[in-house]
Image 1 (cartoon, one colour):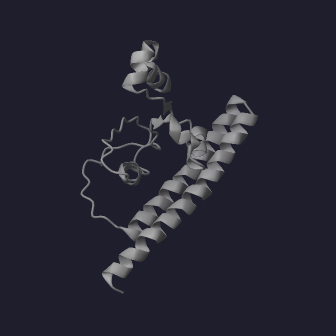
Image 2 (cartoon, rainbow, N blue to C red; image 1 turned 60 degrees about the vertical axis):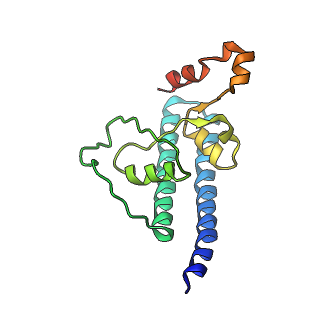
Length: 167
């Protein structure tokens, strides 16, 4: 198979499988969120949250397999020796590509607790993904433009308040 044909097939197949993975796992996590919302018992919510994170682990695992099958990048990763699943970590990304989050998930999967990210509030409205992020209690940030902040100075610092509440 020529390289051109291989690359032409690889990209759409990867996107199809990635979409199916998101729909499948996102639907299950969203269902956990609905159950959490309907039955507000604290101990029950803890159990449902654990199930949702377990399902999310399946999403990350499947995502990792898809990356390996379709791209298999060469990694040079150092410094993972002393990580602990019971530890607390602040992982920062500079978002230079769309693969920052999947890459961090791949590197740290089963090395540290499940990664949670601050997300833009608009992501909550992305089908399957948004509802899953909501069910997993990912903190959403509402960002304001400079123009909006100039018109409404009382909105300054709201994102900092959200960050403090989430941490």
